[in-house]
Length: 82
Image (tube, rainbow, N blue to C red; front, side, top):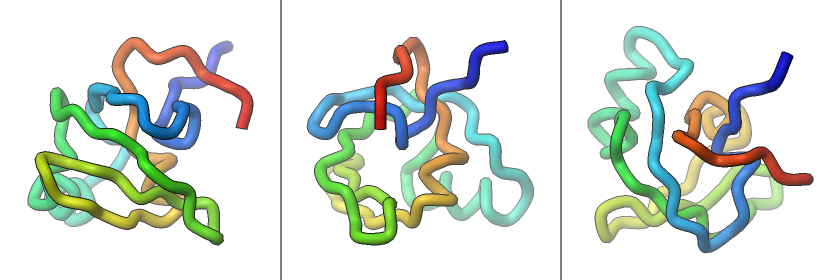
């Protein structure tokens, strides 16, 4: 069984397309409000001390914790070593 690649699996400064997030309900709606929805292109720019990522999304920067990044699946990306 292969794991689905997430934002935690992609190289920094690479533009990737988001797939349907693994979140449900209120969290999924909040991610969509922030522009993190299926089909959106994002670019992880930095790692945070807690393992999260700082992303560029539509000209804005967002800081997400590690657990939230793990919910954001990537379309067509191959997992890389962390």
